Image (tube, rainbow, N blue to C red):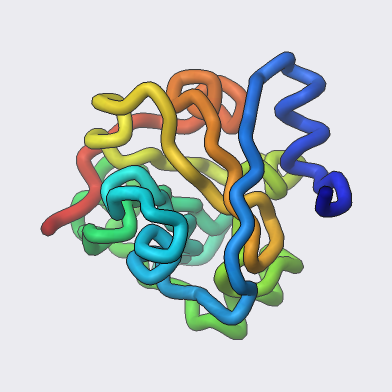
Amino acid sequence: MAQKLNSMRLLEKHNIPYEVTEFPDTLRDAEEIAEVLGVPPYLVYKTLVVQPAEGGKPLLALIAANRQLDLKALAAVSGHKKVTMAAHRDAEQLTGLKVGGISALALTHKNWPVFLDQPATRFEHILVSAGQRGMDLRVPTMALVRVVSARIADISTE
């Protein structure tokens, strides 16, 4: 069993059941990860770090592996004029986590706004990063929304 991560402690504290899924930590692409895990890509959610153009707290956007973030839609729902994807290096500096292991569950102490893409609500469970490369957690979608205070919004395109 892998060591216990903060994301798991958080879920346990809230009595939220989860399953740990592990995969080679060299994989960073959520679609490849879905393939290795034998899970449809629409159930594997990647966590993207997005920065408001005018500065301020970064945002976290959770979208399915097979979808693209719609920056205009995210800017609109988050009340910003414009938002941009954080560069890998900036994302790692801001979060203290490695790209491929960035997890909303591991960042709740930062109180960053979290946005979960609307399609997630169609599924009982989704997979999200555990906060470390090579590990995802299968969590109940609505429990995840509660524990990370996510706002559900339409923020992606095919």
